[in-house]
Amino acid sequence: MSDRTILIVGTHDTKEEELSHMAGVVRAQGGGVRTMDVSVLGDPSKPCDISKHEVAAAAGATIAEVAAAEDENRAMRIMAEGAARLASREEAEGRVHGVLVLGGTMGTDLALDVAAALPIGVPKYVVSTVSFSPMLPPERIAPDLQMILWAGGLYGLNSICRASLGQAAGAVLGAARAVESPGAERPRIGMTSFGKTVLTYMVRLKPALEARGFEVAVFHATGMGGRAFEGLAADGAFAAVMDFAPQEVANHAFGSAITAGPDRMTGAGRRGVPQMVAPGCCDLVDFVGWAPPPARLEGREFHAHNRLISSALLNAEERVELARLLKGKLVAAAGPVTLLLPKGGCNEWDRPGGPLSDPDGLEAFMNEMRTGLPAGVTTLELDAHINDSDFSDAVVAEFDRWIAEGVVAC
Image (cartoon, rainbow, N blue to C red; front, side, top):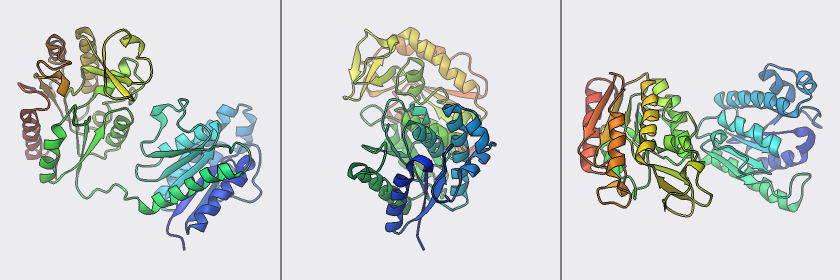
């Protein structure tokens, strides 16, 4: 018997040879395979484990109805909905331990929905003619999705595309065997931050929180990290969140491609998860370093962090605009909220005398954050920089209050 089973998804009417090749690689390595056909017009040469009729039915349609739409985009979206639902059910019921999807633009569109329907920790691999393409919107990419370019394989097998197909098949099976799925041995705290050259509070907070019986997961707030954080918060994966780097809200508002989407800083609030919030790096907007800056930021000085990412400093008026956006997120929260305002600065470059210090802009932001918050939001103003030990000490003291009052439990 095989130790792990992989769900292989694709259009068997047009890509059966390639899909069969990947299935053969998985089986040759001792893995099991379940196949799913997402074709619309044609039929496979032999039955799949999950037929196109089952896929359409899972989306509330029949294949005849899908084909009758005479609109390939609408047809594939129906099949994507059904495929995502069935993949989720297959995984939840223990029949599959990873998924491998093959496709061009149509198949990749479907693959993104299938991957998004599966929890973090379930291996997801896509072989695509458009892997890593700017056509793929970041908000649709599952946080742990793996991709490989389907080079030279648009039609038929050859030695070039076999290399990609074999790598993908071996990778997803290896991942399914090696993965340690996120468990719940200890209550988990989700925290956002940047690297230690910019924000350092996690260095003090992680051991302090672990000593209190909690697991701490720190997410890099550079778009995809924030998306993963939001998704887990919305799913109730955290006992509490410490969202101390909500800068992705600013990125999205000011047109940066480094975005976690419009729902950033809402997942915990909607779920009622207790949250602490601080404005780490909210004086900056990050944007792709090798591309032109967003239109709203053209013409101003910026800090090149590396060749991938640059940061532009917001002026006082823009910081007031951002403060209003952040408050709007907090007002909608259904659970306890503590807002920490470090008046000494919000990132390492923002210290008095630092290269990005702007005392007037910082004060304008803080003044706006002080007003218009609901009574349920606890506000702690600190005569400290966000990277000072006084900030971390205040976080721990507030967290201890939460424990004592039963807001969180270890």
